[in-house]
Image (cartoon, rainbow, N blue to C red):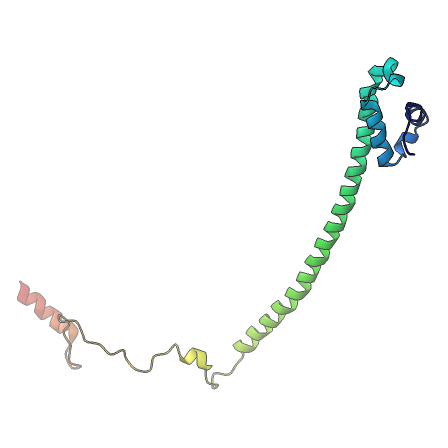
Length: 153
């Protein structure tokens, strides 16, 4: 329909075909209502009502399009979530199996090189503090402390 007339709009309203008219024609109906043409002058009270009906139809079509797009997006998110799970589950399984194998390794096997690096084979060189007293291996520490207590009294 190129340029709808007020009569076309009246007919669409009466027979209910306004709900099946394409969106472009509905927009042209709104323009027709907003011009305040003489054909509608006796029915000015109905202009806002008809405008609201047309806006409602356009809004419902817009919401339907958005719902369709959201359904597509939701399906995509579900597919990606399933793909992520399919990738993660084998990784967890193989890590679990590797831990079980590591627990059953006989103690006669040598430790991996990375664990050997944590053990220090030689002491750290450095000087002792000035007030540090080195005890000889044969001295009884308890006896020495008792003698210190006696000498302090």
